Amino acid sequence: MSPEYEIINYKRFRPSIVANARLELLHTGMRWAEGPVYFADGDYLLWSDIPNNRILRWVEGGGVTTYRYPSNNANGNTRDRQGRLITCESGGRRLTRTEYDGSVTVLADNFQGKRLNSPNDVVVRSDDTIWFTDPDYGILSDYTGDKAESELGANHVFRFDPRSGTLDTATAEMVKPNGLAFSPDESILYVADTSISHDPAGAHHIMAWQVVDGRRLVEPRVFATIEPGVSDGFRVDTAGNIWTSAGDGVHCYAPDGELIGKIQCPEVVTNLTFGGPKHNRLFLTCATSLYAIYVGERGAQRP
Ligand code: MG
Image (cartoon, rainbow, N blue to C red; front, side):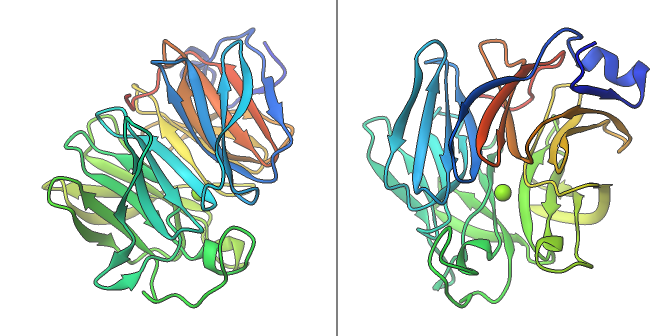
């Protein structure tokens, strides 16, 4: 068994890992990396180096190049159902879509006339709606955006419908909403709250919300409390397990909330995503580095 693994529940975690797979360092030298998104059509990965104001691209067998500079301090990335890049611009305070010709379309930059805080992380539902978090991290200092007062005065989870162009709030009840992902059947939206970053008594957990009518969030409950560190970003596999970033690596939670195992990592893990042609390779953005490891599950999110 590779030394990176810490198995807590052997029966439940053993099928989810590849015993001799090792953590591979793919790249280093970022200032703070987040937002990995995989493109199977080119076997490459994009991710954000937020303070360095750039999006990087790693190509299997081809090294790393700069994909976009300046990136308006891009943070979270994903793809829509049509394969286009969707980006949370922390510094740009907007949600964008990169079209097939490379042009960038602004999808949302305000809610009811007030500027967004600093979009952080994003997922797309099977009905094409785009769900993203908008905490105030990017406007608290000049490090990953421009310091400013929040015009909204709240940190929302938003739902954007690209067909109608409407932006609705899904909830404003979380203190600092951060990473998010749907369960495989999309009946649950998991959203991390990482408010301990600015309040020692704050949250370091993942909330589970029931999704009603594809648009409303009800019956919030604490799904898992992350220790050490926070769940800055996470993804769900086809079995419903949640693989989340944490202070000491990756933590894997079964759908019932049991912590079944960990992958130890030499740096703080920020975000992660499934990738590779079979969707069974976990790409980890860490503080300053990009790692990958093959696992025994496949990611639920496509493309
Ligand atoms: Mg984040």
